[in-house]
Image 1 (cartoon, rainbow, N blue to C red):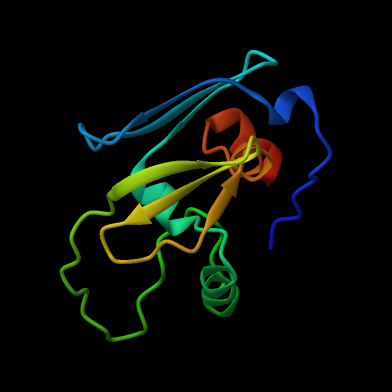
Image 2: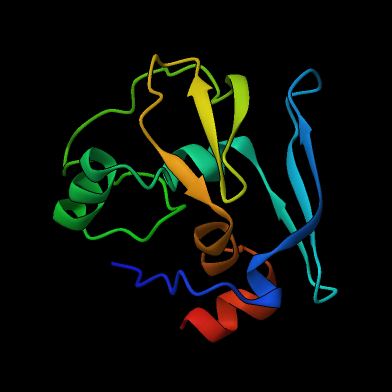
Length: 127
């Protein structure tokens, strides 16, 4: 489980956000401290911060952004690629995606998105 520090900080404040809904390629955030984060939509869907998804990840022993593990002997089922149908700003602190699998419960705060940044530098710091 990730512990997100909600304290406003320069690192948790985006300078610019680009969501590539039409191209379906993901989201780019340039943070005010100069850091750059690039998220695929699959990563973001697998990192959904809602209570239901957090609980499922906890039971499966996977980190935010990791694909769910298959049960031993289970065959992978075809699932359409994760893609948001829409993305909306929530106040000044977050985004909410409505996904093509009818899931729309997660509110992705800027602090959470910075915490789960998948770049090599951040992954090394995350352990």
